[in-house]
Image 1: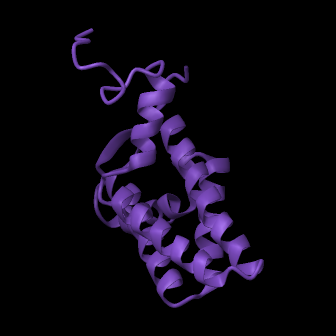
Image 2 (image 1 turned 120 degrees about the vertical axis):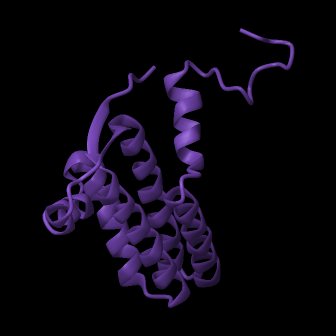
Image 3 (image 1 turned 180 degrees about the horizontal axis):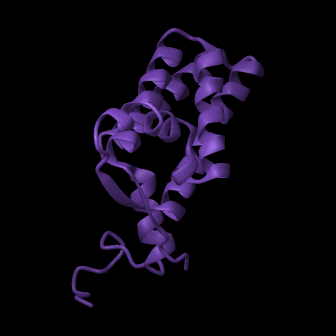
Length: 152
C-alpha cells in the first residue's frame, strides 16, 4: 500500500530522540505534570509534520553532540516513522483530554501505559511499527495473520 521511503539519520540522534521522549513521558506521567506530556505531544506532532530527517530532537543532537563525534548513519523508513509518531501523538492527546474531562485517574493510568509503549519503542520493540509493516506495507500479509499451512 505505502511504499517504503528510506531516509538516513544519525543513529545516536535517532536513539536520543526515542530515549528523551520515553524519559519525559515517564517523568510527566509519574509526576502528573501535564505540561511535560503536552511537550511530548508537540514533539511528536512536529516530527510528523517535519519528517524524521528534520525532527527537532534529531536536529538538536546533530547540531551539538554529532559535531563532536562522527555520526553513524542509519536508514529508517520515513513513512513508517511518521505513522508511528502520528499514533503516539493521538495516544498522548486522548488521555490529556480524559484528564480535562474529569477522568483524571483513567487519564493518568492511560498515560502510564503510553509511557510503557514509548519505552518499548525506544528499546526497539515498537508494536505500532510492526502494525505498520504488517498491514500497510505488505498488503496485509503478516506472519501472524497467515494460516499455519500457508507457506507462500
